[in-house]
Length: 492
Length: 100
Image (cartoon, rainbow over all chains, first blue to last red; front, top):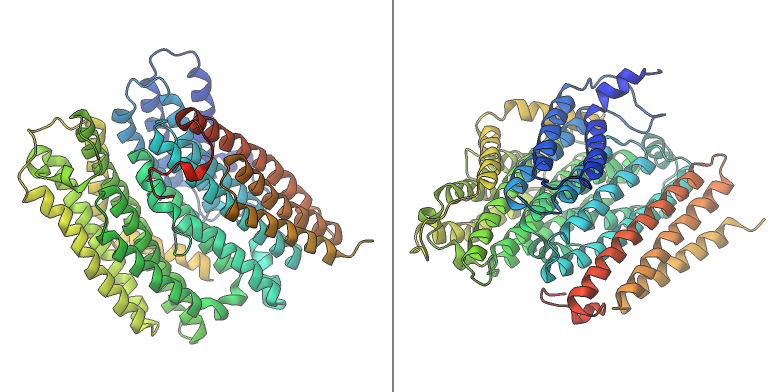
């Protein structure tokens, strides 16, 4: 089916707009003295792009010679990516106000978002790899953005680990191409059903390693806490919420679509990986003094929770259970991804406010837990938002975190993985300890200083994230339906 | 014609060399070289497979990946230069404010 140019524009309008905007911004940024307009420009661009993504027709066929597809799955993730970028830009309005390099920040952010959107849409390993790299390269530069010592170290680690993971991914892709003779994911799947051998397993191993780095699954997680702690805090928010979710969508696409034949083989190995990931993330998070580092380890634990979806699908296939079990598992994984994206962004932005406050008062260790003492009185909006985000992360209703965790827990039991469900519940209980400790500092400890004026951009960003987290928690039905139709795309 | 398995062996050897270098070296430039070796081993695979298959997708993929490797080197060296200006060294084990 040949599509007209106008179809391309209506289906991929969001990506086209953001790419164009980024290129225009980098050009006019050369000639402008006062660059505060740039933030507004990218804000407007992202809002329009959000509507374009929502309005795209999901029934039209593949685009660009069968390399990009617009379906429920791709739109689900694109909405997350654009919304997260939007929230980060709002925070950026305060963080990089009057900065001479702010145009570059927004351009990199927009290009990274485009890369993630391409990954979400791609049904061909070439486009998937290009989108993945576009997003990665932009985020490497963003992690070094403030050019402080800590930033550079974080960026260097992120760069080395990131490029090794890309290389592993590429090597895995090259083996898949050699085995199947095609770069289309669907055809690779058909070919690997026909002839599955040890070489396919080797390719899978490389791919799991490559994606595992981005998803921060143990044992590929070691870069994440360092990078999340060292990068500028709002960039960390983008990494945890955007970049990591890109790893998940790529893994969903490749592991489910391309390697259907291997589902039987890997689910137990993955279950063990998941169990280790969530336990290690939570246990190490308990010992952290830095709130940013604690949130980073909680992010590792969340990677484990979300990856339960893979295990549920594998177990459902293996046990010959109804397809609906697999769909439940996948949809609940998607709901947890959605919830986690917003609550983690919000929590990191709240941490950015505290860091800003501590630095403006000339104190050392801006991320330390001590800085949160009496935050409820010093910065009431930030403290309240942080409270809700932490409740959501620990899975207390009525928040997005509760919906995702509850659904995932149920689907783990349905698929017969009771031990994993129990471990999941125990881990959630364990995580409550370190989340509550922050809340205790914020509301029980005596404040260490007077009330502060919270920067408007940060407040706007946190309130938007807060509204979304509560909205998903109170009226989850529309999101759940969307997640189910996205899961159907993967499983049919 | 050279058998395909030799190409795959060469690529695997290069991949192993690159990975070994990444684990043992601590100089920023050497690490970048190792990453390039890793990427190029995958490129050899792609082109070799493509020559034995009835399509050229692999060669196109290799061209894209060469371009991406260049961009990656650009970003990497930019980070290294800034790192050098701040720390005065690119020996990464000397840079450990965070735990390396």
